[in-house]
Each structure stands twice: as structure tokens, then as C-alpha cells.
Length: 311
Image (cartoon, rainbow, N blue to C red; front, top):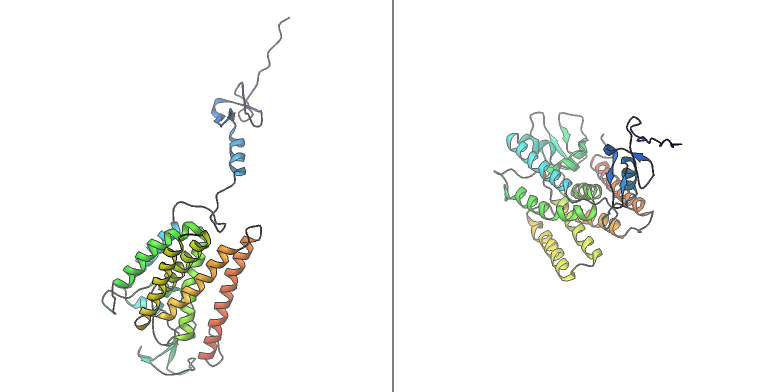
């Protein structure tokens, strides 16, 4: 008697006859479903499952590894676009620069003097004390007009060159999410220290606070990796020297605030325990800094407004 041979069909395409098995799940697969594997052939489902089981590369602080510093490119583009916008419409700077508090008359004239800054007469309050909290962050994306100030166009040029050089390195060491958090919190830290220590009526702009925070992270991360100590120490010496030299003609409060916040967050990222708690510790450190900065700003505004906190 002739034995009838068994016809095997592809498990993904039941109408297609096939004779090849997946070396992982041993189900039959047709030529359209065959995927080359290190050993034998696999079906698409097993290839996807294998890809999920491969341990993904991580940065030294546990971030997702990336070869393209996308966040740095986006921040660079935002700064440049904001600069072009303010050149076309200079009033953007006046509206979104970092200002603690200033009194404005009905004709747009400014008045100087002490608080309280919440008024009910013909004068109105502009700045953070007037409820414009967004200035704490928007000011970090604005720069001096090319036709004003000591530096003019050099202001944004220097900041963007440093961001391009440092940001690409620090982002690849931290990962995109952590780098974005560090940059924005450093910018916020610089603005809050300005709010606390600087003349409340003085307007200031620039990404310098965020840049100094990125520089602090560069130093912390390279020390964590055990990089060349002499080279890293020279870098931080230049950073501190520029902080001191520029104090006479720039917002040193913004520089120092960004440096302190960026350094603190970088320390938390770099030295968090390397186990299941690492992400929680890092997120907790970031949240703690946000709360600290928010409370500090709220207390200062309360002092400036005689006890009221505008929303």
C-alpha cells in the first residue's frame, strides 16, 4: 500500500503549502514568512519576540541609548527661531524676557521703586510678580538684539556654539529625556535665582543658565566615568572663571543658578543606585528640584507683592 504524504500548510497563510519549519517555534512557514536567523530560519513573530528579549543598550545613567542628539538640535533650532522672531518683532523680548516686577503706566511708561507690586490704580504690574510665570522659562530662549547691548549678535552666537559643542556630548551620555529635563531645569534655576537676587525691574534674556547647567553636567559625568582629571578640571576652571569675569556685565545670578541646578541634577543622575530604584531616585531628584524652585519663587513673589501670589 502507498502511504499518503501529509500536506503541511503555513500557519500564517493556511492556503499555502510549505515544508520549512521555524527553528524557534517549529511551526511551518511559507517562503514569504521566512526570516533569516543566526541559525536556521524564523517566522516574523519569533523575530519580533527575539528583538524584545534583547537587552537594550543604556547610557551610564540608565537612559535610552541614542546616536543622534535630537534634543540638542531641537533646542538649537528653537533658540534660532526665537531670535529671528524677535528681530522681526522686538516687542517679543519685552513681553517674554525675565522680569521680576515692574510698574507700567497707562501709556506704557515704566516706573521704578520698591514694592508692593500689586496695584489697583492706573499702574499695573508686569513680570513674574504680575502673574507672568512663563517668563521664568521663555527668557531662556531669547537673546540680545543684534543692534543692542554690549555683545549684540555675539550673545546668541556664543551660547549656540557652546550648546552645539556641549549639548551633543551630554545628551548622548544622559539620554534624550534626562538631557531635556536637565536643560530646562537649569534654565528655570537661573531665572529663579535672578528673581531672588537681581534687580526685579531689570529685564534679562539668554540661554546662559541652561548652558552653565549643561557644563556642570559635562563635568560631573566625566568625573563619574573617571575621565582625564586634568582636562576635566581645566574645563570647570574655565567655566567658573567665565562666571566670575562675566559678573560685571551679564546676569551672574542666572549663570550661577543654572550651574547649581544642573550640577545637582547631574549628580543625582550619575550616582543614583544602579538597580531597580535608579529611575525612581532620578525622577524624585528632578521633582524635588522643581518643588524647591517653585516654592522659592512663590515666597519671593509673595514678599514682592505684600503677601499676594498672582496667578
